[in-house]
Length: 111
Length: 114
Image: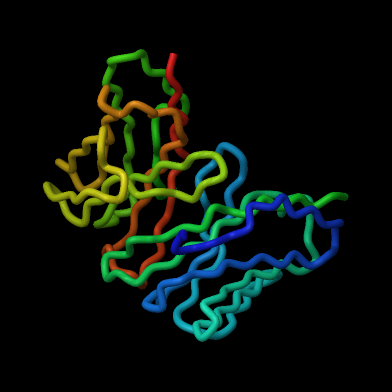
């Protein structure tokens, strides 16, 4: 079993809809949680970064962490075609920042 | 602009050949990382380095080698011992190698076998 599980999709939504993404994990020691967006043939770009449980909002993006359930989510409001990308969750516990990644979910926002 | 530069963007390797991927950063970051990304899989850590002249193996180091002679540079060599080198290689860096500093990535090198 992988330490971090993420549905690969693809997830197709109409423009303007809410995109809901999630990851589950098995290691209860994870403390720092990240969401990256990756366009085709590009490197991952950091979207959200949260510590421990709780919610964090940044513009159209909301990240949620539920450590008791070992479950993290990313919501994208008012989705745009430019949001079409692969979204990777990542998390870490080590002091030197070794990240464990999910496989990534491909999102397609149709006009 | 500060950032991480990976080169070349595309690279082809012949059987039995070693190839070197370049990664340079001008962010004054201490720690640097190499990942491999295969279709449908998450990123897997190959090597990482927290300071100059020091580096450690990640989860899939076999068939790869690195050096860290300068703070801003962390080249990765894919040796002939790596039997399945075709993948997208990503370099990342972070300020202190601490878990409260997110990693930033370059735009990758796509390696293929001829």
